[in-house]
Image (cartoon, rainbow, N blue to C red):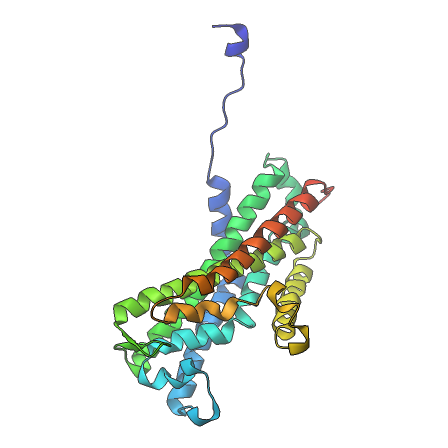
Length: 283
């Protein structure tokens, strides 16, 4: 064995310690717990309100709301649809806005980079935490809505949007598919939030900016005169999850939303890397 071989640096093994630490931090952080509790409370309030005063279906009420009194399964769908405009984006904005800016604000970012943790690895772990939150949030809403819906309205076979009947087990699989689809969409929002988080040392600023961008996307999507802009809006395809409640499921109708989310993820993760790689970290 040569001297060069004996003095060669040991191969660094992959460790998930940093990732596990990040996920644990996200879970135990009090504001995140409060946020999840708020997300879970809205379906309960919705179900109780409908139980006390059945909705008037003659004025074009959404199908999900109109069908709640017949099957509590639809509480979960109505809650997801209602929270998708504002509350779910706020939850993701809180997590993603705090990803890098929160470390800078607390003065721990420079310490993390001297552990050492490479900048690419830091961004990857931070985004993994955001993705975990993006999938967890709709699951929490769906679980809360499903539980309170079954308690107040019961269950049974589910009438799909196409008019056909599906067994309760199949309906649960479709609901899981809805949550996974929304998880991908919210992960794209989180990628934008991660980029914004690299631009500032104030996590609240990144959170507010991302929330405003999400709301603006929804508002712009309702203006017919801007139809040329609609295909490029981040929230354009979020409501397409309804395709998972048709028989048969049109996966071609879901593809544009998934491709749009993937494009946003690639573009803004690249932008976050470009910004963070050359950033002079002093905090």
